[in-house]
Amino acid sequence: MDRFLLRILISLLLIIFCSSPSFAQPKIFNSKVPVMPVEDIKAGMEGVAYTVIKGQKVVTFPVKVLSVLPSADLPHKLILIQAYGPVIEKTGGIAAGMSGSPVFINGKLVGAIGYGWHFSEHNKGLVTPISEMASIWNWPDRAVELKGPIKISIESSDEKKESNAKKAGNLSTPMTIYGLSDRGASGIGQKLNVSYSMLPGSFNVSSLPVNLNAKLIPGDAVSVLLAWGDVSIAATGTLTALSTDGRFLAFAHPFLNRGAVYYPVAKAWIHDVIPSLEAPFKIGTPTEIVGVVTQDRPQAIGGYLGKIPPAFDFSLSMKDKDTGKVVKKRFQFVNDPFLLSNLLDNILVGLWDNIWERKGEGTAKVDLEIEGRSLVDGWRRSNIFYSDKDLGKDMFSEAIDITKAIMLNPYYEINPFGVHIDVEVTQEPRILLIEGLTVPKEPLKPGEPFEITVKMRPFRGRAVEKKFVLNMPEDAVGTYEVVVRGGGIEEPSQESLLQGWRAITDLKELLRELDSMEANNELVVELRYDGSPNRAPWEAKAEEQDKRLLSEIKKEKMEKGLLKVYKSNYYVDGLLRKLVKVSGKQRNN
Image 1: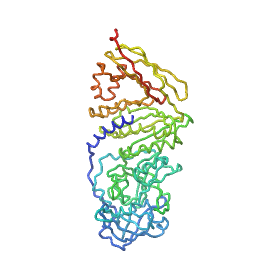
Image 2 (image 1 turned 120 degrees about the horizontal axis):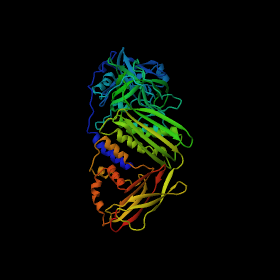
Image 3 (image 1 turned 45 degrees about the vertical axis):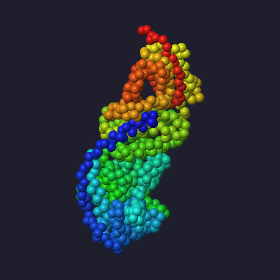
Image 4 (image 1 turned 90 degrees about the vertical axis):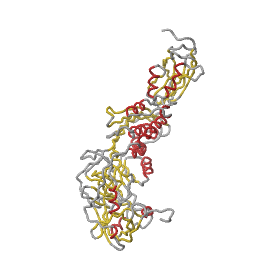
C-alpha cells in the first residue's frame, strides 16, 4: 500500500507546481514612532532596549553602540551593541527570546536585537536596523481571506563570504512544544532545525482566546504559532514596531524563513529567563491570539494585528479496549499544507504516545475521516494495523499518506480542511493467519463456478474455514491460479500511472483510486491466469486492462466473479496460491 500511495503522490506533485498563487501589492511600513537611519548611527552612542523578562511587563536595559558592520547577505548592515545594567545581570546576558527587542537612541527607533554569540559572556549582540526589517514589505503578501473574530478552542575569504549575522547566529527564537512525546517533539525540532523546550502537562495552553482588539506596544512578548489546542508548537520573541495601518514587525531575524505565510501571532507570558553557558533563554507560552504573521523573511517577521488566518483542524480519539480508557484530543495547524505534510508524522505519533501512555506492540482499528470544501459528504476509510514493535509509528503511515494526497491535490484548495482519526486499540495481537487453501482437483469447465476453501487461524486460536465461489471465465483455456492473501500483500500496482499511460485528472478520480486500496483486514481471493502459452482469449485484452486505473480493473474483476473480498475484524496475514486447470468445452446453460 505504501508503494501504491507513493505512485499517486508522485503523479500529483508533478502537476502541483504548474499553478502559481496570486499576490497582493507590497506596502510601505510607516512606523508609529520616529526612526533613526542606520547611516546616522555612530560608535559610542548610547540607547535603551525594551523587552519582557517576567510575566508581561516591559522593562528596559541600556545599550552602547560599538560599531556598524557591513554584510554581504541579508541584513546588509548590523549594529554591534553592548548591553549592561541590572536586567542584563539578572538574565545572564542577551537571551534567546529577546529577538525583536526594540532599541531606541535619543527617542528614535534604530532597530531590534536579532543576533548574538553562543558560549560567550552574552552581553554583546547585533541589532538589525529598522530599515532592513521594514524591507520585508517589499515582498507582497499572498492573497488570502484574513478573517475577523472567530472562536478557537482549543567572513572570511574571497572564495567564501559569510554574513556577520551568520557568524554570530540569530538568537534562536525559543520554541516550546506541548502535548507531544519526546520523540514527536525531537522529530519536529530536527525537521525545523530549531532548539525547543518541552512543557509539562501542568501548563494550560490547550485553549487560546482570540482578542482582535488587543493593544500591543514595542517590547511586548509575542508567540508565533504553528499548532495550538491540545498540541501547541510556538516560538516566542519580541514585538519591535507597529505601523499606522495595523501592521507589526518582530524578531529581527527569520522564524522559519518561509516567505509569505499565514501564522497566528499571540501575546505571550514569560515564565522566566533560564541561565545557560551556551546562551540564556526565555520560557514563554501564548495567552491570546491577536493577529497574523504574513511575512517570514531573513530580516524579520511581520504581519497584521486584528486579523486571523484560516487553519487546518485535526482530532485524534482513542478507545483502549484493554482498559476502557477513552481520550479525544483536538488541535489546529497553520494553513501551510507543505509544512504540515513534513511534520504530521511527528505530531500524530507524539500525540499518540501521550494518550496511549506506552510504546510497543498492539493492534489498532483506525477510522480516518477527511472533510472540507469540495468534499460535500467527506471521505472515509477504515483499516486495521498490527505491529510487534511500534504500533504508534506504523498505524498512522497510511493516514498520513492519504492526508498528503488529498491536502496537496492540484485540483481544488480544500479550505477549511479537517482530519479526524478514531482509533480502537488493544495490546493483543489480533492477527488472522492464512494457513490453508483447498481448490478443486478435477479440471474445470469454461464458465463454470467453482468453490474453494480457505483455512485461517487467529493468533493462538482455533482454525476456522471459509468458503468462496469464483467464476471461471466463459472463454477460459489452460491453467489458472487461485491466490488468497491478506489485503495489501502483493496488491496489484497502478501500472497505468507508473507507466504514464494515464493520469488522475480531478479530485473525484483521486478519491476513487484511494477508495480502491486494499485494507489490512481484508481477505482477498482472486483467480489469475498463470501465463501459459495456451492463453485464454479473455486474457488477450490484458494490455487494454493495464491502461485502466486500478479501480476500474478491480470493479470489472469483482463483477465477473474473478475477485472476492472478505472484510474481517483482524489483521489478515499470509499468502497462498494453487493452480486449477480448465479443459473441455464451455458448459451449457
